[in-house]
Amino acid sequence: MFEQAEKNRRIISGGHDMEKNGRIVRYTDEELIAMQKRGESKSNWAVAAAMTYAEIEAAIADDPDEAGMVVDWSTTSVELPQPKVVLNMRVDYDIIEFFRSEGKGYQTKINAVLRSYVDQRRKHARRLSNLNKFE
Image (cartoon, rainbow, N blue to C red; front, top):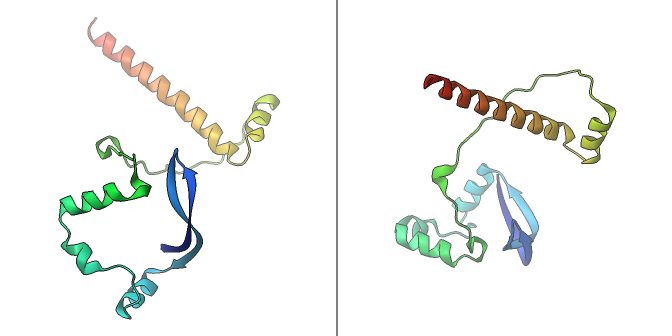
């Protein structure tokens, strides 16, 4: 799915200024291919394909949406979501009310808190295991 937008305006997002557009039009892959064949594409793909790495980096550096955005891709990871299980459990009233008061997605937040707890316990167990190796 590709989104094309018109009528530029500026908004603040993710801590920096970004160009955003007022009217968004959605196209499928097939529609985009057909538009390109009819010459309706606003992109000059031949010019883009001929660009050197340095020219691409310069174009990115000149893009106001990319200003100050540095991503260290060497530290990223892809984590596929694990399947969820249905759980019926008893929880103190004030605990569930706290998470519900946080709004939509409260079950996801509860899961994130539990995941953080499990991760910390596992790290602690690994540290103890490593210490025991030296005794």
